[in-house]
Image 1 (cartoon, rainbow, N blue to C red):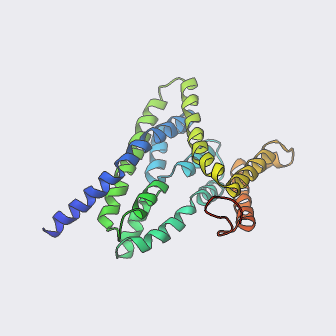
Image 2: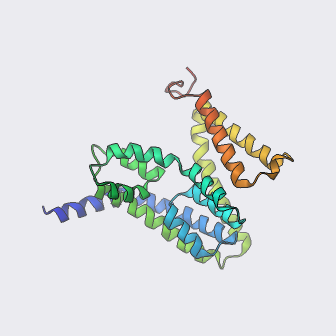
Image 3: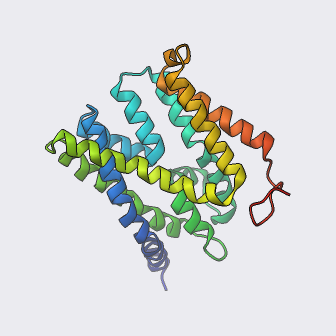
Length: 243
């Protein structure tokens, strides 16, 4: 088998592995684009955000801040804090992916998401760069394609329908958080703490003056730090109960 044929086979093997994620990403990015356009962003801007970010939570936060003309440092730091988990995922994947030059590693790192990371780590043995490229290519196309369709639809849909589709994003985030919170007391307490802090920034007279982006940063960092101090890794048993 030629080297080119082997690369093609590895790429398409990865693409088939990531196809279900591609189908799942499309409706989520569609809802994101509709929500972003409804908030006042032009659809090409929403499309550019998806092409350059490839992350749901970071994009939603960034687009919301852009829509209210937040300062660039606030937008940048907010998105950085939300997406910082990808540093840890990339460090883990660096031990899983076969040897590649630094430039190629930096290139394929743009395809790291929660679901792609999980699928890559589940593969037996080392993962080739071509397999990972195929694994992330499908989800990326689904994400960008869904954003394009959602952006075009958001420009013509009634505002009431656009707002309803925007709620789907937050429903997705809730669906992600609830299962681990039900299994782990630590996760549940950290989530409850972050919600409490968010409410304080939303309703207390003095804290209401803090811009939403900085409030999000403070809530995320404070809740994460408290969770790390109160519930260090290894303190819980497999059943999720405190040791």
